[in-house]
Length: 340
Length: 242
Image (cartoon, rainbow over all chains, first blue to last red; front, side, top):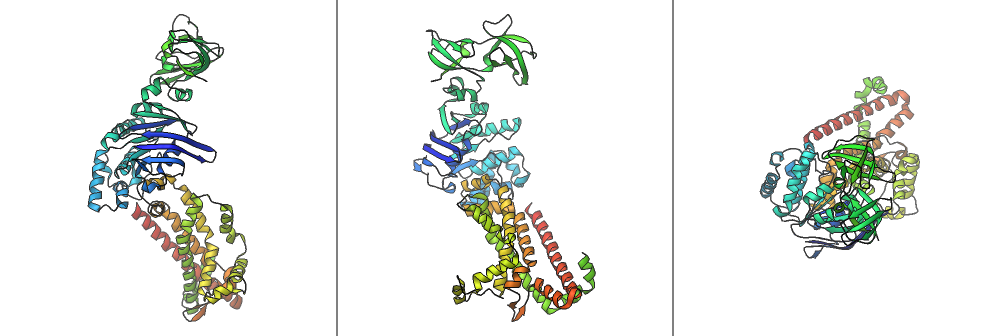
């Protein structure tokens, strides 16, 4: 188990923390945040690359003062790090060589993990000839072969094509149980986080703003920054008044909504684009002109503009820019986050 | 090329003159010492500059560039003042038998000082190109900073190190101004020998242009041959690494 206790540091103008976070044995923790939110800095602080205030406790041992080479923490960098003067076997057994493991044992262990990750056929290849997906698997093998106590992954999928990504996702998902190691994986992709995480921590401006299981984070975010990050593309300020069955929400832009959440006070009303429906005959309270249409995998992303605001929705209907449409927002789809 | 063409007929005869061969030998010794120093001391120093921020770094940077900013004769005078005058640390150096004036050691110190700037800047640029995550990854695998530097960084920048070394070597071979002041001739194998650049300067002064031509052409041919051999070796080493 890894525990971060009141971790904080300053790098130039950027302040990280204070951060309190823990990851349990065999747990897959995803830290999600925008670019520049401090995710990589957090990983490098855990690794010991930056000295910080607070404590890093790994399996009941305080490793705060230990250098990276003494922490036994595995690391896979975002930038496909390979020791390209070595072949793949040399890369995988790099950590074993430092530990003075005899040659025969090194070869055997490297071969075994390469087989498990499907890269046995690469063992004699020069590391400089590998594709992105191959490099990523070699990096994983190299990190796992030393039996780290925790594995840190810095945006491991960000530079891969979709097909390779699917292959690597299956490998990543299996790591915590197969290798008995907790994983901390940082990303800005919410679908990646939703697929892989046992627990999610959301980072913004150097701080963890909320944490929890994926379903809760994705359906009921407690912070409007989280909501924006996990796909609530429509976020409006307003005032909610509880009516017993839910709330009436008067938004600052003039729109009135109904939410199934019962709350009174200033709120952020958050709505996912895929939950907004286009209706045929007039609207109950919302109609506007289509400003832009974007094709995407699940249909069309439409930006509808009214007099006072814009709203984004996803539909399977092929609509045309300039067309006037009416939409409805089901009350179960309006998630309220207190704004105070 | 013109020089070699004009002096072609006399190159062999120049290379048969013992005193000239001695001067080339001295030049090669001091230049090779400068190249070795550049690699052994310059690489970690360049790493420090490329990877770390520290107080007065700008001053250190300026000091490194100093030898290429000021006339080399002045550098020679500075070295004489530092080691051979009666002030400062000079009495101490004399007391421990550390003499730089007209010695091989003095010539080596002089060319090191004048040539080390170039390789340090070459190494620094190359190290900056290496992703710091490479070293961090090595360290998470158990490598000490020194192990990571030698086994991960150096293999990535070895070609720049090799280029920096030959630049230091070439710069040392070409040095005249400071050597005129510090080591006009040095005691080598029991006789007084001038570095080849000074040897040629003396030939020019004593024998005129025609007299200096054959030694100049011979030195250029020898240096050119060294460069070609060095480049071939680098190419062979590069192929072996792939």
